[in-house]
Length: 430
Image (cartoon, rainbow, N blue to C red; front, side):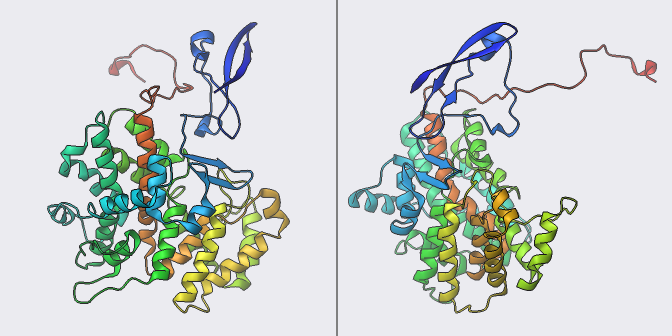
């Protein structure tokens, strides 16, 4: 909605620019007419001060530590709901009724199998292939198997593609894990809930019945909820940018998976775990904190601070409790990594350096410990992140496709290369 106008003055010329207001959060200046009227672009590396789209899905207040899905606080959704309920909310905009939830669960469950020929597709990978490499390829390959849901102009096909990806990415993720450890693929089971089914496909074997641990299944479900969406982050922006060209939804999500693979994005929890392992014992923490404070030392404390949150990451509080629940359930009383993590957190929350820099523990600080305790290797951490984020990507992609003002993404640049010059024949070049 419009909140009036602002003015931009340059070289004695004044241009009126509309100021728009969101439901909550800061107002924005609409600079769309700037180039037409002033012959100028804005320059904003990393787009930290630029809204690339209008969205009704997720809201973050980094200063206050707030994360809302469709207006609902992440704490309430993680405490009282389950992941498929969150999926429904992100896709449709409202929490489901009991009958809507039952129908949604049924439809997702009946889409969890993947085309049988995909097992042969997996055999083309080396045994030591990284699970994320396999996931990027297999998600993109879905478009080769499901031609009947790639027409983005058809709302029915868009929804079918959305349901398929929510249902099939866990199956592909589990297959990537099984392939990497040389175990047979496990078919999904329709009598299990979404998260229990995923754990069954990861840790079950054909020679015996796998019984999911409800505490671990609930913890995994909560991890999925916490990672389901996070506004216009790098991978979500990648999905939207790919989708703006009219690419099919499977290709767009594969692009998001590829972007998430970056260590500065989805690989942060793996980096945090490696850091805790490097520290080793609580008595070595002061040494590493001193290194973190030293500007000439390349060492960085991973799992602290966030690009958006300048307060305590609201997801970290939930993840901390979940970590304790998992360790207690598994009987892990004296975990060296947890001892280091707890002491590091205690120091960080009281040390003036961390307080001044607002380096609070983030979700990656705890999720790595939890996933390791549950039996996942570090190579699977980002795969699990991608599984959870799939629904957010789909909701954002779907919103973009249905936005009448949507156009192909085309950022501008500040060119600093050579000016125009004439070609010199090779014999005349010195």
